[in-house]
Image (cartoon, rainbow, N blue to C red):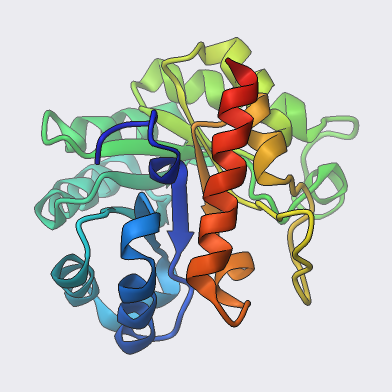
Length: 246
């Protein structure tokens, strides 16, 4: 990986598939136009660490292990220590676990090169969910909670956070340019997703212009008949947005 100056390295493809066969098929198609492949709960629980080996056999792209760890600090620290052997770039933990848990995750990563990302508020949620379903105080907004979590993640030593494109500028204002922002819920303007569960979505161009470092894209790439062409269009949009920002 050559760094963020190469637009393709900013694109993370979410391998939201049920098994290793489907994952390898996408990896083969997208190897030369994707910076990282994201392995989430569904795939990792189904296949275990063997899916990470399969990805590496067919691609030089890095791996983002999106497990959203959330447990007592000691358990999370040991889990992160175990994850080191997988040689992945990013691993996620929930900011809602508190600063002690975040610090334990960072401690578990040590100097291995594994970077811890704090998950702020899932992009499937909005302010109404916080107050009506999760019991947060009336009047608290998603933005307020995300700023709190971003500050907490930075103070704990996390490399970055997961947030929607709508909150990138807020996060950067809190953590500065060194705090990595990884943005899911990316929806190209010309690509509708059926049964979409994203509440705080943004186009690739908008997210990059807001200051996002990495974009996570799943169905807008996997659903079209030509996934590689879909990925290349997004990379082109990233490239144009970066050029406009200079």
